[in-house]
Length: 197
Image 1 (cartoon, rainbow, N blue to C red):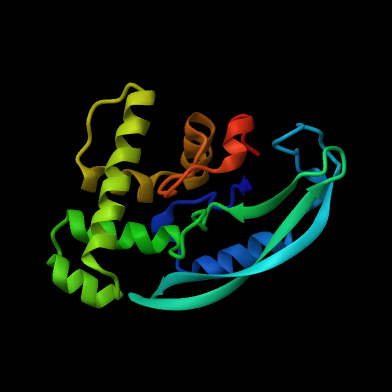
Image 2 (cartoon, rainbow, N blue to C red):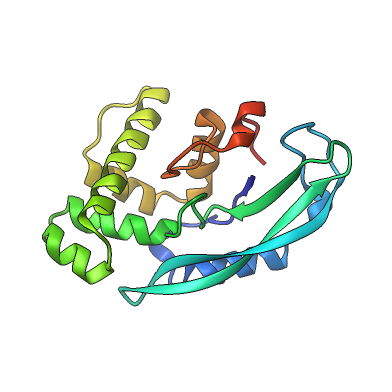
């Protein structure tokens, strides 16, 4: 899998869906400009295939189920294929980054009870707690790598939503850890190196 930066703005300013941002990014995607994460050759990738996947987005405060078509490229140098995912999409998750951050922001600021959050966003308490634990773990990893002082979870979400370019954070997190922020399990490609594209 190849992670691509697409959020060169503050998340708080985004007024559209993850699917719209995904489609906007893919319209300008050029496979020949990609460096293969396995053999590191550049200019040898071409579109190979695609697959459909569903994402659950948040539009006007409500969960919306949408389908996207993920492009796969193949490196003609080494023969490995890779899915192209902009940073609006969390690998191996049905939920987009905006959805999870919105739910967690409401959870950490105590705007709603767990029961009302789960009802409003059609999720289970176990899912909410899994996201909370993953967020806290990712936050601790990021703060320890950068040797930064501890931040309250709600302050860290605010930091993410207000930083000038979210893609700077997401690419930095990927480069340092080998996985995407809020990704549930490791990317097999991370075994071959942590170079980010």
